[in-house]
Length: 366
Image (cartoon, rainbow, N blue to C red):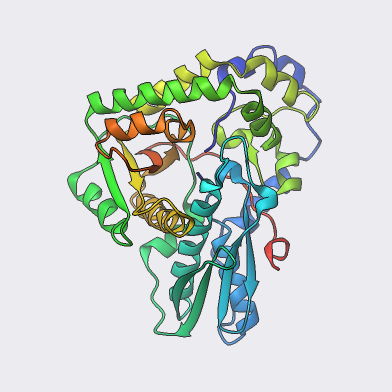
């Protein structure tokens, strides 16, 4: 979800392609491709089998985005209830010291679950469980309704690539705003090119600070899966190909990362990304607490699913809000002085990249 910074593809390619021949694990693409098919799909389940149905709802929930694709969630199943809990063993303290992204990710997972429940004939009523710092979702029978948002779940991805630079139609922007309405979360859609350039200035400042932070760089590197075999084996993290970067043998990837991950090349990449986007969406919660962060995640996920239904891609640009010193200045820029901007998301039409993977349902149950 919520931050996905990668090394630059161009510099990674220098010298690497000549070293790859015969180095990648034999047959690595096949298990990864099978894992993609097993992960990103609509499933079939007997709605009369309550236990199987609840597990299927959890599977849909895990298709949500999370920071560095850490999948920082756990699910507790009861007869008529699913509780989504934070898995703090998967937190990222360097980029997310107050666990903001963890709880936004829980909200994204919750929204997927709510949409999937309705498609399977269950109404989901969510309430924040302060004692467990989680979201309790009570399920009750209702008429099954298959929404475009539900249909979009297996097709959504955080697409970290250049887009086509074309504006969205007014009706498409209206549909995005409508999907993100409710729960006290404010959505700001920025499409003016001058304003996008001002946002880019903050992205570059934040990215430069982060790339000069050894703890941030080491944390990011730990979550990168440098080839298809590693991605399929782990089922989490950031597969290099999912950002349009070359895949590398496990032994070579970390070495090339250290050589190629440099502020200038990364900042140039983000400039291309912003300038090729149709716009930037900023999400602002009603409060600065865990319950509100979860609501931001739910609203963002509806936005992302609606964008997917329209053939529009999304990706995170959270550097201006992850660097605490920049956050108040960025809030002033976008007209929300004194408030915390929760997410910065670019959107536009672009290519489909190889998807990230997910861990099995059994691994996220408690």
